[in-house]
Image (cartoon, each protein chain N blue to C red):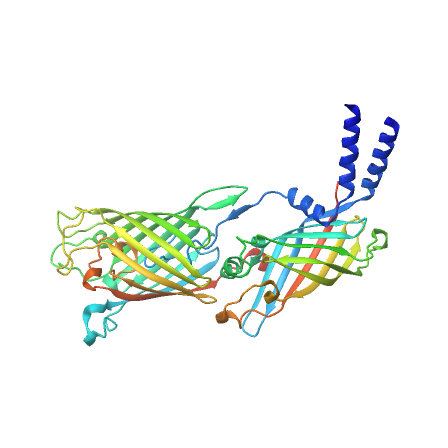
Length: 302
Length: 182
């Protein structure tokens, strides 16, 4: 027995002695502290198409985002298939931290100002720590600045306000496919009739498929369970919003081109204000252009 | 018999005693790309490396996601599209400092040549560069090296749309402070 221990000792020291470069590398890797690998680029932009994705701007990064939605493609040649009739939203989003963003924006659609609070509170990761999904909470407040529809009656400022709260849950599968679920609550302080609910519950689903390094295909769908909205808008019933688009990425820009049945460019207009029907050709062509500016550099570069 | 075993074991022990390693886990690698359009710089302060002071064998292990860029978007593109950090998380170097001798090192940096295989983005290339080595009064070994790599040598594809923004040769600066390993 003792002899075996001795032999083992010799073998052990022998092997210890024959450190080649590979052994040196193994020793370096094996004694290293395990690292956590955070999943990156679940989506290319902070927006899927019109609604938010789980992505946030990094700390100190200011994002300038311009969105355009043209009129309906089926509006005919006289309106150049909708090109004559564009709505625009411009906005800024800023990374207070890597996970906490704030933003402001203004849409020509319903002359609305919006404010955004966005918090990525869980991240998909592997390695030393594991977690299967990225989770982001996004909250918006909207101020409708149009003139009162009924100026004669007593109007309150609060009637101009609408809210959105969404929980975004996303997972990136490999490096090709990302999926996102978006349970969403829209609250409208003022609605047209008693049959319209002030608070609308909806469920969104989104996806992004990587075609190549700089090209992705995205889709976004919001389902509104029936019985929550009864009023028509412009004589049309409210529809579920469905959008598809592509992301084209260059250095500091992301161009997103899409087709959608929604005119608005934030959650509130996707859920409860969408009236286009894909089947009838009520499709809007649109695009987003985003540009990021590094306002505050990381500490290594100060 | 027992005596022989002990003697043999001691012999090997003694030998192991000589096989001294110096290590760092906080080495710095910076790289620079300079073009007319923009300059790109990245820094990684968590580079691991070991040098065997007995024979000059040296290895580096570099976590790609630990490179920090001035612009967060550059960092994402670097990891996602260029070096593909999910598939190839680490760059590695295995090699040897030629004619290394610990006793030759002084506080004044001395040039040595270093040869070995550099693995980036799943592609291995033999390289031959120079390294400046010195030793300070605390017995730390300090190594610095500057050399260049070409992304195309490591199958790193730069999309045509940003080809003007990224240099064909990337300058790499390495700085390591090795401590004696226990």
